[in-house]
Length: 446
Ligand SMILES: Nc1ncnc2c1ncn2[C@@H]1O[C@H](COP(=O)(O)OP(=O)(O)OP(=O)(O)O)[C@@H](O)[C@H]1O
Image (cartoon, rainbow, N blue to C red; front, side, top):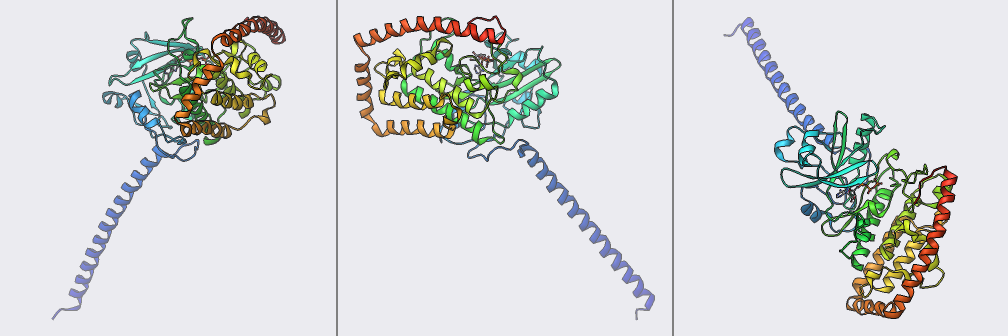
């Protein structure tokens, strides 16, 4: 017979055992839950952009190798994508890497020093410092842009800029893949573009003529690539990004001649006219409305893009009176035929050339609101390309008829007329430039 006090003892023991079991269960549940929420937080930290951009249609993953990068950077045409960054430096180095809030890897000065063979591999000189080719330990290539140490930009501003740049990713933008802030050294590391700038391809570099001739279909594709890049900045990024310095020197080409827009999203202090006019941008590409009102809009970028398209067609540099030629050409219905790049003779389809010139002329319309949006420009160029692929073989025959329009005597007459005009226009531009400088109180000459 179990007495009453035994029952109490048994009851208390069972109660205690149950309580202990419950406490243990609670402990494990809490532990499991904490573990899960930590994982979720880590995942979110990598993915949440502080500058929101439109959702990715297709992720572009940058790799150290320019060639493999391009594999993911080709069609489909419209994909705009915030990128998931992978630290693409040699694995031995990644342990030392810090990743900024935007996911952009931060490098030590000594790493960049090594990758650029102690800064001896110069690619060119920009307005805010030299650019070096960097060869990574795993063979991957990059371009390291060194900021002049006299920059007035503070560390925090630089970091903010990196974060902003790090949010902008598109296959038609030269993407930022790393940065360095080490004592007074500041560098931005970009993907390497092995075919250099459009400016060099059209006009040669350092006074040397280029040997590489851009074919018409390449030029058409370049125009479309640029249009996609700007479309992402204007209509894909939130808030929209105005480039402010679109020019052929800021269009870079990868190993398969696909074009990407460079130098986007840079702070305004870095974008200035070399003519010292006090205006931001580059002489020859600047929207006249901006010059007169000092107000820069999306339509000012459209103007500069129009100038680049006209360069693709004529291979006349904007600082060599391109717009004067265009104005002369616009006096006759097919005036553009007379100033098409001679190197395109027998290779271009004149109908396509005229169509592309038509959209370029709309872009450089003096009234900003009459200029098309970037979306319209893209659609227009796409239509020209689609017409080309539908035309198939017919296009080839048409291209030889262009040779017929511009060959022999006709061609030399036109060229000599243009040369005469060049001299006259050069004089005219000289006078204009003096006026411009007098207005701005500068003494710089062309
Ligand atoms: N990512 C890159 N890959 C390969 N070459 C590059 C890259 N970025 C720049 N370069 C080259 O480095 C040179 C200087 O470029 P940078 O962008 O600094 O100046 P810029 O655009 O020519 O002039 P500015 O600074 O006045 O805009 C150019 O000749 C360009 O071709």
